[in-house]
Length: 350
Image (tube, rainbow, N blue to C red):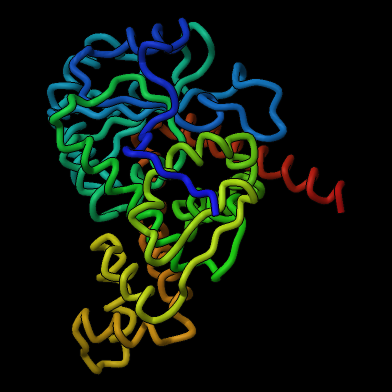
């Protein structure tokens, strides 16, 4: 059986040196002490059913060491990017970022030379917590999918290790959700769908075909992103690169292996839900019992949903003051319009 055997993870799609003029210009708008920055979504990569990325809003994440220092400099450069909350000053902006929601501060529907931007600011400590433990499963979820790097972290920065760990987390989670035999595209749809599982916006305000539209044009990018993790899973799973067929062991021993390597937040949620009847069992006992339970995939799915649901609600509420009321309404209507169009396409095919 032909299998992928790559020596190191391809954490990104493309390199900053290959950026287009548009993305070089976007980077030039911001203070230059960024730790890490990337673009994601339909403004970075063409999705199924789209002719190009040119008319789409460009989504960015900017990672900084010091949120207050960044907002101080960014207010000097880009005063108009912020809602009226800017009058409270950079210290308040940073506090609002670091204490509420998924620890991201978004400026939304920002006009620039080529169209519109939406950018989120997150501290390096917060993104590392999310990548390693799925504390909010917010930025970590975006990084389960291919992204376009704009600024790479230094080789010795802990974000590098955390990025790889996040992808490993996603593989272990996805395999627990999948059956013994499945196709490559099913794996990537499961991986891409983790961060949308439980997100209330998927039932109100998002394209119903979002996950499929992300995966189908990007099979090769997903393959490159996850290929190097197969050797570490060789005892429990393998992928035939010729047929695109994946096979895995779904025995209790295999499930325990994956459960023990899930991110901390998901493990804690599984244990909490298992013990809801009031009879306390520790992590080891819960995982042993869950591994023998036919509902094990459902337990994992519910834990992911609860994590995503909590952060999607709190971050969306946080977006109202940071975007401003009028921009929030505009952004919401744009999302609903996308959902309506996807429903019309789906109904047209049925």
